[in-house]
Amino acid sequence: MTLDQLLDKVPPELRPVAAKYGPALVAMTAEQFAAWLDLLIQGKTFEAWQQVMAKLDDAGLLAEWQDVGASWDTANAANADRLSLQREAALAVLKVLLGGALAMVGL
Image 1 (cartoon, one colour):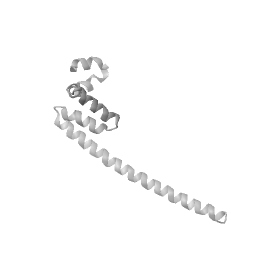
Image 2 (cartoon, helix red, strand yellow):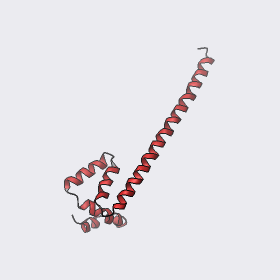
Image 3 (tube, helix red, strand yellow):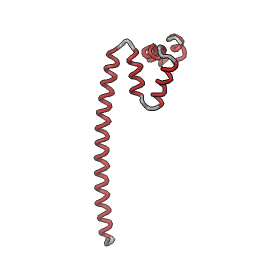
Image 4 (tube, one colour):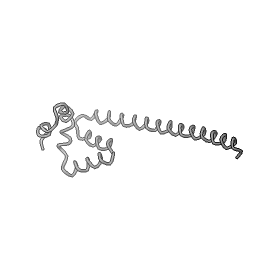
């Protein structure tokens, strides 16, 4: 498939995106494209798009993508820590409430 054939099959509003990333996708063999789709299906989106960006002429785009991915990893870790703290706080409140309830019934 050529890039023009790909662009013909893409809705008009998505053609700028297809024009930018399409050359990397069109350059893939059928096996590479199947492996790329498998990454997407497995939820390995970052790895899949990193492969596409590595095939583009714009090396700065790949570096920017990696920077954004690193910031997402940092944010995800911070969110996980915050959720863990919330769970611990909720568990502590429930333990106090349970202790109070048990004391009220004489246990």
